[in-house]
Length: 295
Image 1: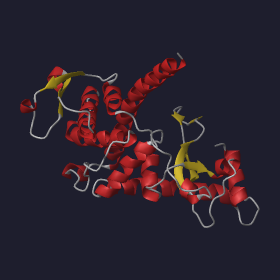
Image 2: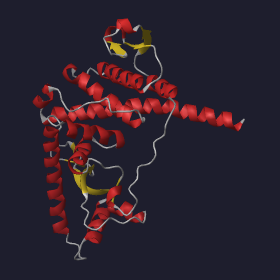
Image 3: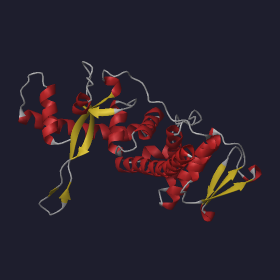
Image 4: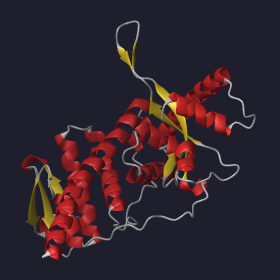
């Protein structure tokens, strides 16, 4: 959104009907500072509160393109958000905001400029958006696409950064259906029917393979892999009731704000990579089916 559009929104939402530029600048500065404070607070909260942490994962599953900072801002203000747009976009869609609703503050990149030291600086500006539940539209989730279990598993291993081999259940830890072995760069999977449990196990180990390849922090890798597996399961309609984030690892509390942001960023990055790899196979399957139907 341009500064002009932001000012237009401010004008249209102003009860007085008159735009005061200095007041608008002060308001934007206050909102930006408020945003940074909320981000800082959430970085602490998600390391000690499992429900807050799970909210972040749910938001990543729904808003994969949002930055980690904006995911944290949504978790602080509207953890159940489903569909977001700014005031102008809702208005152009002929959708009104319910009376009394407050905008959700997020951050968006501003125009780059060169500082006195010659370095390029990209500032961030506060922006307000509204969730669909805050509008006149009926609050309903879009129906998720239910795909065949075999297709989901094929998509999950599509373009994986490792090999896959079958293994006997007796060679695996009790209750474990898949395991990534770093020295072999291989995920060993027990034979069995295509079930939600199989998907969850493979998704977690696939996340582990990606994290190992990237050299991610070994102290956080296992928990991050579980988190990524949860997001991938949620995005694909897999039952997530088996995931439990009520008890968070003790080492999370020791993380400073920068490392929490890095963890959220990595979880988002790998979950998006796996999702994009899966989408390639879904698209191929759709195109093949279209050609078959046309014959």
